[in-house]
Image (tube, rainbow, N blue to C red; front, side):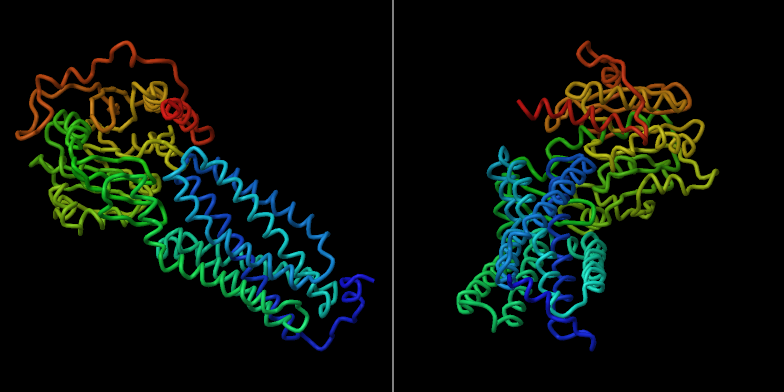
Length: 521
């Protein structure tokens, strides 16, 4: 008779939960929480670093669940010394799962070509180990728990642990600890479960001293990693960004990094360059002034995105402006560019203007909630490129239909629209989508050295008329050269494109394909 058969032959204790049972069920809660953290960390990091969050989350979660199934199947081959096997697996999960975010960050910086292979390799390994945990706990619990109660109790604690982490991960853990420390903290918790198992089953385990030493070393490694997490992050990001990092933070929405080098400050969101100090004036002057000057005397302006305040800086150069509403999803962005003295100086302290109202919310929802008479003379749409479906929804016909309703009859909206040279079809997809809701689309482009050839689209109810004059003191734009931006050479001329819809975001796929070809070379 095997050890498991002998254990299952014992009668279930009907006098209520025993200490060992309670301890193991508590361990199930912790194990489930830790397993989900590793899964979410891998999915979030892949979406940060590879883009297209829906694809990354789907493939990571699918791979992880498959690996858990493999682990559950493999558990049948563990017949003897179940507590010892459980203890060893906990330590392996603790070390590999806990280190997963740190390893992936370093791999992205030092070995980007191997990142995908390492990502899915770690997901398979951690998923397999996590898949082994619950079956082993259930088989150990059969000593004291009747079979009819066993599954319900284990699954209850398993699901409760998953619920707790699914709420805490985006709202508390990542914003407060960052991705690397979150992984190491839960690795430490996995190792603590192993220590608890060591104590519970100390009389059954062989070579208790060796198990105790393994637990101690694992805890020491994870604690050391947690304490030195900032050094790990700096090591990875200094290599990736090259310039000295002067500010970095992880919000529930993105990774914010500001660097400073010989050419000034640069802002990165999830590793993607948003502006460079040396030439951002070219981008923001081209974004704002063609529509502001064409309107003549705009009074009420909205800026969607652009939490760095650069677009607001240009808007405020018009004395006619009475109010500006800045809608930025991430409060960390507006706080940073309001309170950080050096960065606030770059936007001319525009975010402290008494004319400005900052609203930290999703722009799509904000437009939906506006009343019918809440109209704007100019709307500046300055979102990041559509690298994933969460951002891609802000480039759909549904979004532009809302934009249409909020735009005054004589008003103009301007949309930053990626590169018409590198992502030609993506650019014209936006134009096609704007036109599909009945707005007139007027495209133009400008050369920004940090980005290359960059494009914009003006959306309006009436045909666009170029202004005869621009504000004084601009560094790049002038009235005589403005018409040149509306001329498209053959390699950027319009091509057939589909409408980008919420139900089928073709723009995200097209964008990834076009920019992917450039990155591959």
